[in-house]
Amino acid sequence: MTTYESTRPRPATNGGQTEATGTAPPTGDGASPVGFLDPDDCFTRPFCQTPFVREYLVRIDQYDLLETDLSRFAGVVVSSHADQDYLYRHRDVIREFLDAGGVVAFSGHLATRWLPGAEPFVPRDIEDHTDYVVRETSSHPVFEGVSMDDLTYQRGVSGFFARGHNPPPDHTTAVLELPGGEPVVYVDDETTGGTIFAHSGNDLIGFGRRETSAARVPRQLVSWIRAEAHSNAANPSPARNGEEHR
Image 1: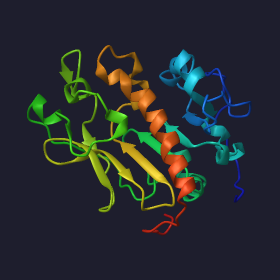
Image 2: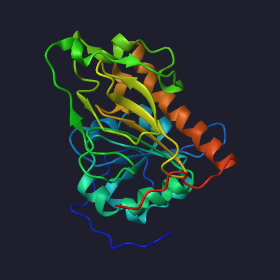
Image 3: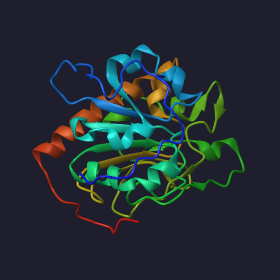
């Protein structure tokens, strides 16, 4: 893997229970672990202290990215609170992981072009709360058994799931859309040799605290990442829509 100059804007604090520099928690089925790229802010710090992280994820301090061997992970979950300027400066690290067959799952408003193929976030023009209603366009294991109303509304308020979209390449598969057809969740398995799962709202990995069917999403996301990475490893292919690195 290419080496890069490391820059650490601040010292990391141990917000999580499991560090990428240590031993990954066992998956129980021999599958590679899934990493959580943690910016260690006031939002992700409490999440990294939950039993869910200890059982399902390996915390990776975002600013340890250059010192982390991503090849041992099935996939990496990137928080909506991630430092996207930092990710852009080191976007080749993410790209190499994807081209090797890895899976990257991102939630959030894309602010810089670190995620291959995607364009920066475009907010939705809103006239009514129903403009935020989510609809399923393609079935996907991450949302199996999940009500679209439980994604759209949180305590009766809409807009938490998505308020716009990160425009994807034309060849992607839209999974969930807003009423105007904006893809708020999509899967891209052509831009790179791996798979990108992109969502334009709050962290899907944190939905486990909800008391609705949406609580199924985090575990199903981790399970899908492992299965997708296994499929990529069994059927390796170069990026079919290779773009120049921006």
